[in-house]
Amino acid sequence: MHFLLNHPELRADITVTDELLNFVKERTLDKKFKIRKEALLGLAMLYKQHMSNPEIPESTKECISWIKNKVLHVYYQTALEDRLLVERILHTCLVPYNNTLEDRMKKLYQLFCSVDEYAIKAF
Image 1 (cartoon, rainbow, N blue to C red):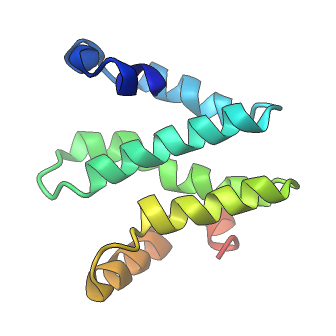
Image 2: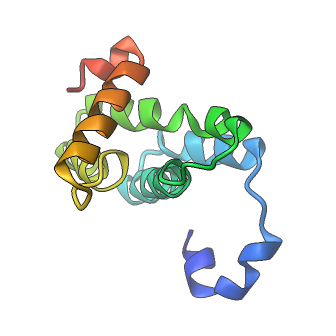
């Protein structure tokens, strides 16, 4: 993700594929917190960027629909840093705090209804 931040002129040359997303998904289980943190934040930003766009194609929605479950599953890690990171991602990316109250409640309800049972227990 830092590559995209430091070299914005190359963004058009990089495509996000299922293979790349699966690689980043695997990094969310890394032993080092810094790597887990960057992987989760990158996935969450990708989710926020695409899900905030109302004209997103269904194929893209299906491709990134697992991200919210993955983020909430990390809440069950034993480290306190992981739990704090999940709460931060929840407030900034999954249900952005800077939206209106009505929009936040709508997104929270949609999130709650669309995650799996294991992720619901993280609430």
